[in-house]
Image 1 (cartoon, one colour):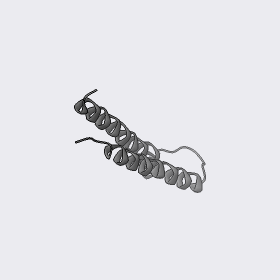
Image 2 (cartoon, rainbow, N blue to C red):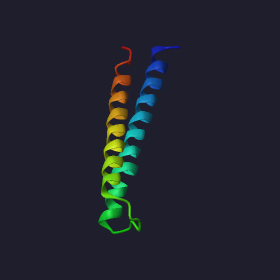
Image 3 (cartoon, rainbow, N blue to C red):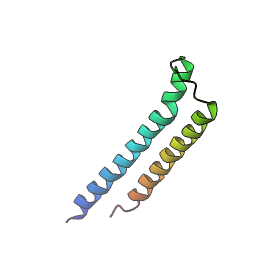
Image 4 (spheres, one colour):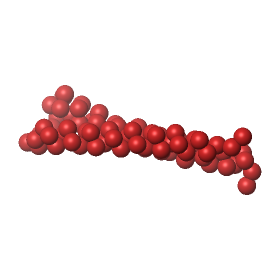
Length: 77
């Protein structure tokens, strides 16, 4: 394959990983914060569960973002 095709595939992979990191941040961190803020959580879940879940999802988002950045280093000139 040509370098152009390889570069486009690399960029598509990096974009997919970055979108997954954004989704992880939204679903795992921002949605629970919004639910608590608007008093939408009708559960007696302890606070530590929200904190651990938020930290876990945030860490996953950061990891996916940096993996996407590493993928972009594979672009050819």
